[in-house]
Structure formats: C-alpha cells, structure tokens
Length: 267
Image (cartoon, rainbow, N blue to C red):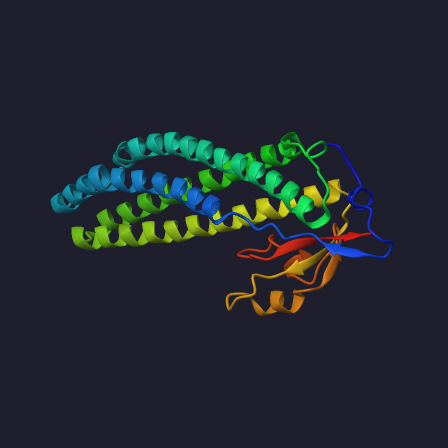
C-alpha cells in the first residue's frame, strides 16, 4: 500500500479544513448479499418441505417412535445440500464484496478529485484492500455457515418434537414456515450489517492511507437513527480512539448502524 499525504497534494492555505464527501455502503450490494442468503434458505426450505415433512407426517400417522437411525436418515440429504449451498452463497458474497471494493476505490478517487482537484490514480490501487477482502471472506463464510447450521438445527428440532408429540401436519408446516421466517430476518440483519461494516473498514483504510487521521460522525439523518447516534452526529474523532457509541465503536460498526465516518483533511 502506498501511503501519501492528501493535504500536501492538495496544497490549500495553512489552517484550512476540508471535509471529504462521505461514501456510503451500496444498497445494491446489500440487496445482492441478501439475495444470495435467501437463495440458500429457499433451497433448504424446499428440501424440508418436499422430503422431510412427508416422512414426518407418515411417521406421525403411524404413531411410531423416532429412532436415532431415522433421525440421521431424514436429515442426511438436508445436511449434504446445506454444505453445497453454503459454498455457493460464500462465492456469491465474495464476488459482491470484490465489486464493492472496486466501487469504493473508484468513488474515493472521484470524490478527492471533485473536492480537492487531486488525481489519486497513481497511489490508490485495488490491491490496497487485499487483506481486508481476505478477512471479510473468512468472517462472512463463518456467518453464512452459522446461518445454515442454525436452520438445520431448527428444522431437526421442530420435526422431532412434532413426531414425538403427534403434531398435526398443518401445524408442523406452519411452525416450519415460522422458523424459516426467523432465519430470513437473521439473513437481512447479516446482509445489512456486513455491507455497512465492510464500507466502514474501507473508509478507514482509504482515509488513513491518505494521511487523514480524523473524521466526523455522520448519521443517515432520518427517523430511524437511534437516539445515541443522533447525539454523535457532527462529533469529530480520531481513528483508533473510542467513540461515544456502543463499546466505543466507530460509525458503521455497531449492530444495525448506518452511520459513516466523513474524513477531515487538515492543511
């Protein structure tokens, strides 16, 4: 990574302070991320509905006790399918993050050109975000696997309880629909948080690389902003120092945070 001093390149009057245009996470990236997770959940739901539920309904009708061997046999296909689906989802998310990194780099250079008249094409490279992309890939793989494993456990527990209790087929299907609904809400949270967090990391890396060590906390300025973050709007912090947010985290890092760090160039 090439480090440089944006303030020197811009050559403004000493004592001048110039905020950089804020770069938000892409709604398109968040939507694409959620789409990848939902594709995985949809296939798992189909396997549950078409294979596992009919076996459970037949078992309930016959009033037989479920054995451990039955348990394994029923869920083997779902477990195998889940392994394949998580790999597909991980690949899709990695592509999304790669495109986000490219978009952010291009946007950062464009905003620096617009705000300060500086061409950064010689010092800003996609490879600068390589370590971040690798860390993000590992983190998101764990989140996707965790979501899929949780779904498998929910399905297994719901079906086994239904067989043990002789639950009517209609009620079993209703409960499974509810469980997949909970998983969908978790998928939404993951997609929203991970894109916001990834964008926050890219803002920090690009700012620090350019010698920009301070930033202003900026909210989304709408009714959904939590009271604590509304109080932080406009406050200036240094990278690496705790903020007034939850656990001292920077913008975009607390759960469900849509705030961003607006870099401040000091001449």
